[in-house]
Length: 173
Image 1 (cartoon, rainbow, N blue to C red):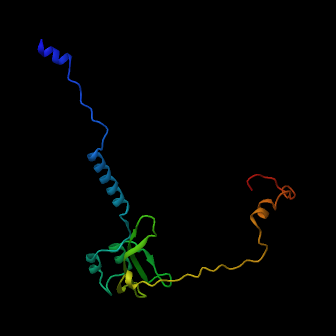
Image 2 (image 1 turned 60 degrees about the vertical axis):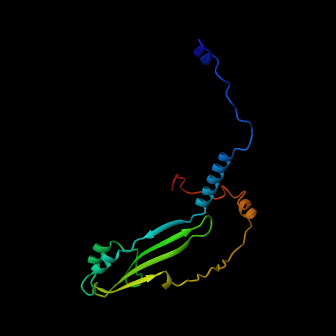
Image 3 (image 1 turned 90 degrees about the vertical axis):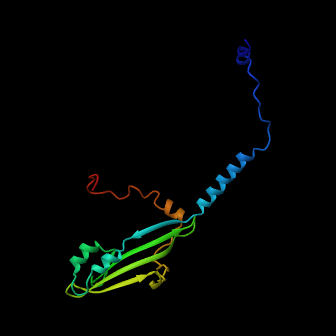
């Protein structure tokens, strides 16, 4: 009987009193710090394609032509716009930290120059340090005519609808 009384009358559960919960607070702080550190990590992205050194070593100056370079490297990132005798394979690595502007941290360019016959004349290797900053002119060319305000543009055509009629009222033309 004694064993039944224990089962039917269990001991009261002990409840914690409201007090500091150190393990829970420490875990929350660790999670918050980890999330903060992860949010500050830069986002790294790689763009473009540069052939590896083994493929570059396979290109022979004076022997290979545009077709063999195309089959070895694939399509170039860009082609010279002047005469088309220079192909560029461009790869760059960009980093962006939080909301700041994205910045190029590394750039590799393999340039393949061809002679007039289409054979490889020279190979060039360029990096980020070889680039030059080009300052584009951001001035605007003024246009002649009236400078209309927003309200003049909105209300300027009121009453002018329907004054001109079309000879052929065919819809869609």
